[in-house]
Length: 261
Image (tube, rainbow, N blue to C red; front, side, top):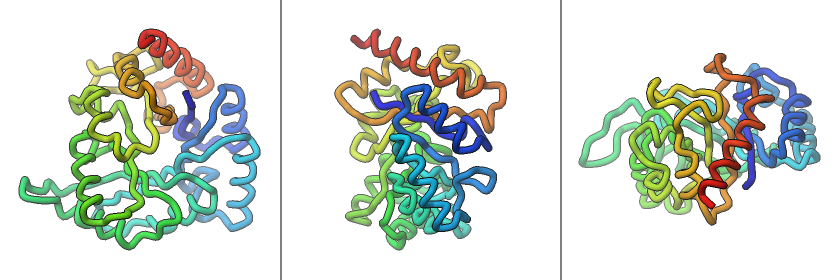
């Protein structure tokens, strides 16, 4: 299986450190957290973007996503185009965005926020994909699938795919198999982490929670999606460092795969 990680797990670390982690843990891809305090941000010059891309490609790594904090359904203006341009310059698959819908909507149709998302997708440049993460207002696979179906119908040929945060769909009552069936027409890659359902799905050290990794691997059997560790050390400083989490995740995955076999 292809294994990746997000730089959310090593906030503020320089590129050299990220590349060392990747080399030492058989990593094939990266999600690059994009913020002013990171080496990946939208203020990078053309030369800086070129150098960053070359160094990552020379390390044999693929950039799965430029991880923005754009909210596609939000009322306020969102810097989507700047992030799409950055992703294209870096050769990334796309830009991670959140739904961020504060409108409840009705059973008769999409919410006002979802209509804003349709408008943004319609007008956005298509040099890189928009990668909607199952998060916040659309953490449940069923709700994300409904939004993507709306996009398919109203914006044919759109460039939106899904980052399946498998812990989020599970926390909303969907088994990995159920969420996969709902999302599989649009999945670009899969985020993984362990969490403790008895503590309101709080992220925990790999193997210390009760996320059903065996069920996820069984649902994904026969597919080739990259599995990316979204290690939320930035927001959960109780977690062990990536230096420990990456090998522990590999062992967690290997054990789950052995159980499936």
